[in-house]
Image (cartoon, rainbow over all chains, first blue to last red; front, top):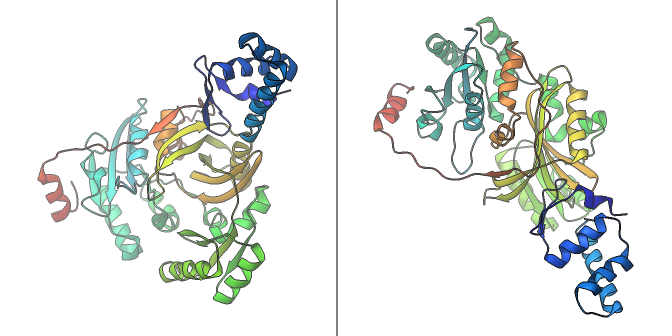
Length: 79
Length: 347
């Protein structure tokens, strides 16, 4: 689903390097967790459930945050 | 040639804020320990920093500018050959290439090799001829129109739509957002570099570069793709990172295979996702050539080995995510070297 993510080098500290473009990014621990889920093929619902488990938030907020994160990645052409 | 010691001369040894490729080329040769090296630097000015890098160059010589004339330069080369016993000359500056390409056979008769593109290859990569090359090799060129008058400029810019790049066929490029700007830039270019001028549509994307060398038979001696992370006010790379963009690598290979390119080159591209636009082809190594050497693809050494008939291992792999950091270093030297360069023309 997110084939482009497979090309990225992501370390445990949230540093991301894109060998295709030379661009680099950083994400926080939440971002690391979401990227890990996306690389494992989890869909938006599963990713939102992951956020809900970690942070005590409502499903709607979790899904909105996941969508926002994915759109951000899309704007950077990482998905 | 001594089988174990290669005598090479390298030009373009100015390592200032607008560095030439020569120091990087010479450092790359020094990085090869299978052979011993005697490396001479060719300088146009006694203050060129390469002259004073005695860990890189064994000897330096002043050489006349190409404008001094064919015979003048050849006489100087034969004098240097008598002293230094040259096996190969590696010119690294655009302005020198026509002379060395023209003199290749004659130099070879005297035992001096070069490894440069043919005249046809050199002609094809000229900025005003790139469309022909792009068609032959399947590379894509941004829409452009060649112009030689203000009237043609005006029509071309209107047809392509602003902003446009106004580019000299030899050097210089300016972005123009209006007809006034386009005309001013056109005037600047023709005053210094003459006609024709290229009007090119501005392409969005990331600037990326590929350095490589061709074996003259369609084979690639090595390729490295990079992205410049920061540049100086003069637009010269200061930091960079190795990348692997399949489209760009493929474009570079097609360029070499289709032209049977001989020697070093640099492709300048604009990349937007999978789309690769060819902007320029430099017919020699760029000043950042040592970056490729540092990641294991020693292109100057490959070129020397190919030219001298020595075994060549065509190294293709390199690691992405390797950083290039250029920095300023200082050296304190005795005045003697400068005196010798000024009075005797050699160190």
